[in-house]
Image (cartoon, rainbow, N blue to C red; front, side):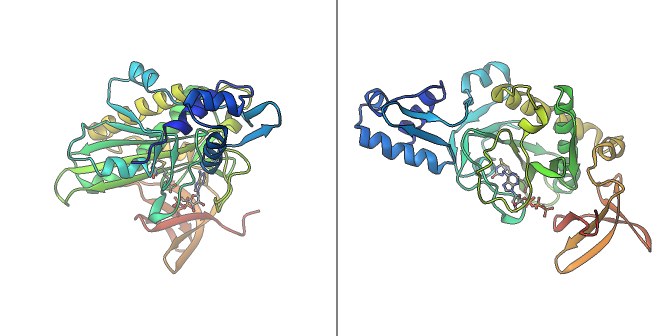
Length: 323
Ligand code: ATP
Ligand code: BTN
C-alpha cells in the first residue's frame, strides 16, 4: 500500500485552520518546500480545495474536521477501522469476510475507486463526506438481502430526523434524497452461496459538505450541510450515529424482517403519488409511484392497475412530464 503519511500530516496541520507556510510544513516533515508543494498538489488531486498566498503559505478554502480513530473507538463497541485513503471501503471488507466479526466497520476519508450500483463511480473527495461500510453475516441468506437494503435506508433517514435533520427522503431502492437531489447512496454487496448464510457488506456514501466545484457527478446532488442549514455537523459524531443505526437496523431486521415496514418507507418515499418511470434494460414503464409492498417491491399504477416490480436491474426516475 502506498504511504500517504506526509500528505495526511499536512492535512492534519491545515485542518487546524489558518495559514501554514511551506517552510513550517516542510520542517514538520523534514522535507524541502518543493517536496511540500508536490504533496499539496497530490492533496488537491484528492479533491481538497487549498489555496496559497504569497508570503503567508497554504490554507484550506473551507474548514475540515478529520475523522478520529480514538473518538470512534471510545464511542463504539464494534470493531471500526479508519483507513484514510482507500480504493473502496466495500471492497476492503469484501476481501476480508472470512476473518471479520459481524458488525465490523471500515471508514475512509477518500476513495480512489468508490463505486455505486452496477459498477458506476461514487465520487469520493477527501474529508468532506462519509464513506462507511459494515460487514454483516446474514443467516437468512441472500434472498433476504433486498429487503435489508430498504430497511437500512429507512433507519438512516429516521436517525437523521432524531438529530433534527428533517426533510430527507428515499428513492427506491436505496438512495437518500434531499429536495429532489441525491444526498446519499447505499450499496449492498455479498459473497456466499444460495441457501447458505450470506456475507454482506453494506456501504453508504453520504455527502456532508461537498464542494460545489466537485466534478464527475452526472445528476443533481446535495449535501447534509444544506439540510442542517446553520447547524454544525460533527463528522465523528455523525459516523458514530450512522454505525449504531446500521448495527441496530440489521439486528432488528434479522428478528422482524419487513413486518410493519411498509408504512415507515411510504412516509419517507420521495416519489409517492408522483409520475415516475421504471427503466429495466431497454424497457421503460411509466405510471404513478405507489410506494412499496411487504416484499420490498416498488408499486406502479398504470392503466392496467397497480403492478409490483422488484430486482437489482431496475432504475426509478422521475417522469420527464412532471412539472
Ligand atoms: P439507480 O441506482 O436507480 O440506477 P442512480 O443514478 O442513483 O440510479 P447509482 O448507481 O445508484 O445510480 O449511483 C451512482 C450514480 O450516483 C452515478 O451515476 C453518479 O451520477 C452519482 N454519484 C456519484 N457520486 C455521487 C455523490 N458523491 N453524490 C451524489 N451522487 C453521486
Ligand atoms: C449508489 O447510490 O449507487 C450507492 C453508492 C454507495 C457508495 C458507498 S461509499 C462507501 C462504500 N464504498 C463504496 O465503494 N461504495 C459504498
